[in-house]
Image 1: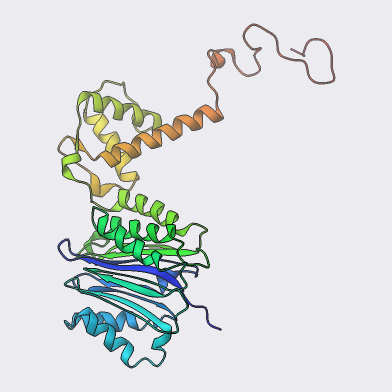
Image 2 (image 1 turned 120 degrees about the vertical axis):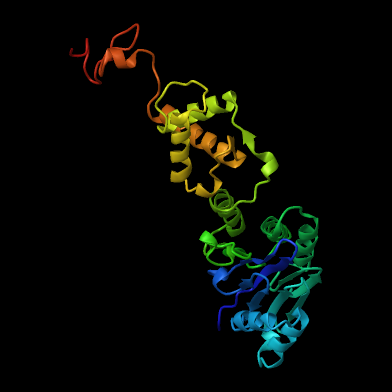
Length: 332
C-alpha cells in the first residue's frame, strides 16, 4: 500500500500585496516536496491525499492561461481516473478559490473555500480543523506568511492530522522576492521530519525573516542617539567586535564594528546609512551579547582578584584543602 500524504493545508493569496502561498502539515515525511506549488501573479495549489504531483505544474500552466480556480480544479480532476482518492485546493491570480475532495479520501476529509483562501485536509481529527484554519486566517492581521502560519497552528490546536505530526512547509511567492531578486520564491521553508514540525517551522521562519526578509515597518526604525550608541558599543565589546572605549559616540570605529557584526550575521539587507537601525537587529545583538555573558559566567565564574593570585593560589581567608586520604597541609 502506498503511503499517502494525509494532511491539512491552506492555500491563499493576497493579490493587493502580490503574494501567493501554501502552508501544510502532515504525518508524512517531507510533505513540502509533494503538496505546495505557487507562482507569483499566477496562483497557488495544494495537492494531497493520494497526491497527484502533476496537479502542481499542470495546474499552474492552466492558471497562467488565465483560467479561474474553479475551472482549473475541474480540468485537473476530470481526466484523472483516481480523482476520488485525490484532494486539491487552488487560488488563482485574482484571489478566486476552489477545492476538490474525492469520495475515497480518508475521513474526516473536506475543504472550506473563502475569499482568497481554501483550507483542506484528510485523515483529520474533525472538520473543525479546517474551520479553525479559515477563521484564524481571516482574523489574523499582517501579510500572507504570518496569516498562513497562524492558520496552520490553529488547525493543529483542533487536532490536526489524527495520525500525528511529522513534517511541515511554508511556500510564499512574490515577484522578485527570491534571493538577490533572482526568482519569485520569497519564502520556501521545510521541516522534513520533526516531532513538532509547526513549531519548528515557526522557529525557522523567525530566523529567515530576521536574516533575509525586509518586512519591518519603517516607522519602527530606531534613531541612534548617544544612549543607543552606548548600548551598541557595550554589546559589540562583549562579542569582540569593538575594542575601544565606551564613549556612547556613533563614531567611525563603532560604525565599522557594527557593520562587521551586521555582515557576519548575514543582515546585509538591513544595513542602514542614515543613523537608524532596525529594532530586530538591535534585539538580535542584545540576545547574542546576553548569551555570551551567560556562557562566560557559566564556564569561567568571576572571582575578585583571581587573576592576580595565579593558578593554585589559596582562596581568600584560608588555605587550600588537603588531598583526600592525606592529613595535614597540602604540599606547597
